[in-house]
Structure formats: C-alpha cells, structure tokens
Image (cartoon, rainbow, N blue to C red; front, side):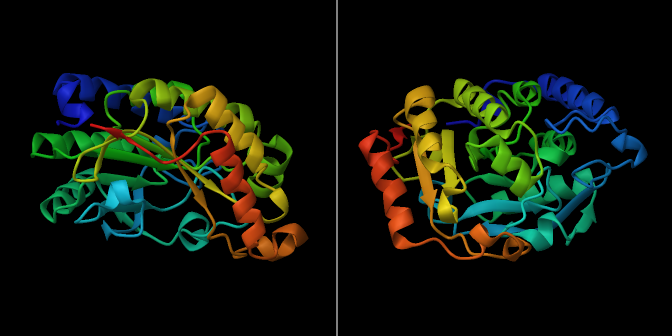
Length: 302
C-alpha cells in the first residue's frame, strides 16, 4: 500500500501545498496562536522558532505504540520548540530549552531517507506543527529521491484546521495528544487559548482525512487516527469528557492510548495539584470509563 503522498498527490500537488504553507509563515498563522509575525525574516512568536529547522534527535524508536513500531521501529524525528508551553512537559529540554541543532531542508530530507533505509516503518514527526511548512518542503525533496513510507503527524492537538487541510493527502497517520477538556486548565498549564474547541475541531478534521487506524497483518499501521491522552493527577486533564468526545463525536473504533507515565518535571512543582505522579486508581478509573463507552485500541485491517 502506497503512502498518501504517492497515491493521492503528484509532485506538482506537493509543490503547491508547500507554497501555500510557506505563505502562512510570512504572517505566521500556521497554528492557532496566530502570532502574525514573519518567520521568513527570523521573527519569533510563541513557539520561539524562526525559519531555520531545529531538531534534537532522530532514529528508529521502539517505545512508541506497537502499530507504529512493528519489527524495525518508528522513524522518529524530534523537532525542537513547541507551539504549546506545558509546565509539566516531559520533553522540556527539547520543547522549552531549545536543545537541538539547525538542519537545512536537504539535510532533513536525507534524514527521512536514512530512516527508511534503516527499515523504519514510517517517518514519525514529533512536535512538527511549528515547522510543518519547512517539513513539507523537505518531504518534496525526499519523495523525488525515493521516499515511500507513511508520514506520522505526532502533535499536541493544538492545530489549525486550515493548516491541516493543506496536509490532506500528505499525512497518513495523525497522532494527537488530546491533553485537556478545560480551556481554563489549558491556559493555566499550557499557555494556550480555547484549547478544547480547537483540539476537538482539529481531531474531527484529522479523522475526516484518514479515518480509523488501519493495521496490516504484520501489525504495522498504514493509515488512520491514533489518539493519545495523558492522565494528569487530580483529574486536571478532564479525562472523562475527553473520552466522551472521542466515543460520541469521533469513533468508537478510535485507537486510543491512555497513558499513565506522567511524572512531575520542569515547572510542575509550582502547581500543587501537579506535583505528584498519578495513582493506580486514577489510571484505572479512566481506563474503565473508556471501556464502558466502548472504546478500545482495535485497529482495522488494511
């Protein structure tokens, strides 16, 4: 099965999408922060990113969800900076402290091709939102040199629907982390506005494009939506409302990973309710509620 960018788009289509995304960076509205600065002139907004691509690391990753990892790993590329400012960020050294190196578009294309040559089942773009214009330019170079594995868009869910529409036919697997169901908590803990309405609209658009997760007989995903939800202590994430949204407004066949690995890092110790790991009972409560509403992680053959 060919990835979407080979099956549904031509090189000319990719060039047009790349051009449209580049236009959005000139008065940057790539994401819902709508900073309206010209990153092509190295102005910076909330994501603290200029036009240059910054990555912290790349390589086969075996700690992702099984349908992404398969036998040879998910080809992850960790991008520096983020369009959210989570006080408890588990990768804060990358997202907030700018740990990373500058790469140009040809080098990023080369990394994609290297990951493919190492047998990775996909190109897993971790925190790609703020660099998506440059990534698509790099993808175009890689495609012309033989890239032919699926693209995974691994994000925090704070996405512009208009930008996502330009990624239709480019991204094969969307993997948002739906973090909160409360705008107030999202503002307090991640510094973003109107998170709940934005993330729900974004997830619906992702689902419209790719549908439920399709998994080959080999166990590797080829296309679809995979949602993550990190449980926070004291129900700060509003997990039950997140579960209800997925079950009732997206699909009961959604591949959902309810994550229990939260631990207080970065500035979490400044918020009393965040300053502890979650308990087993907190985790089991969310898991049981998801099961009660008919959610699992089945995947579909494909």
